[in-house]
Length: 265
Image (cartoon, rainbow, N blue to C red; front, side, top):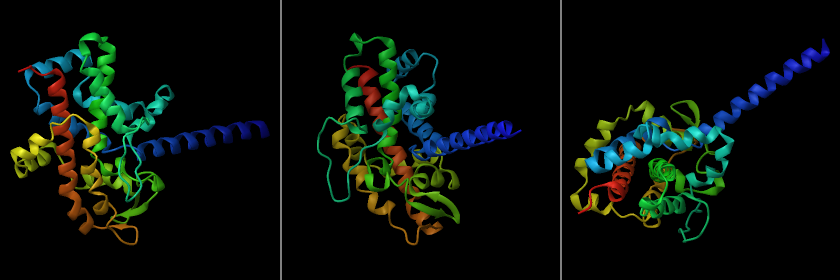
């Protein structure tokens, strides 16, 4: 009886640890599934038929929405543990990003773009892999806490109450605001009218190192709350910022994919 009891307790503890690991993984995601889907949908609207046909070919049965979420879907697969640092870059408050060779989101995006510039010399499976990286990481890049501070692990260790429910600052930005405010693809596309053509054209640069000042500039706004409380006033202040970041990520991703796979002038 004692042995049976111990075996049962071992299974229960194992299941609890596994469930906690899943929660921890979920808290590290940027935008969550809905946000990444919005980003890739926006990008797809920016592509010509050549680029769309190329994506269809190389994704080989996977939709662009699935491509945008693939890296998060693989977090529970230890085969891909080496990709975890690719989702973010840590820069402490008051510091600026300096070019380096670290395994971070900036270098991973730039390497994927550089590789796909020579896709005619690559295997289809390698092209697909680099497309999957871009479809996800360009979205991650524009969630400000993925270019945040190591001291609180990109807001994951900042415990807050979101409308009186327990959450953390990272989850507030990747999921809570999007879900509670029901932010949609159409909401983000409507924000496009607030951007000038010049601003939109500026989003066509292909070097992630030059993008980083944009989401970093929003961190003051992200941390602007008191008593670890995210109230409706905070949400109202930041809803349009979330929409803008999803939109800009989609425009950026579309510009990258159009450059790499679209019709050449």
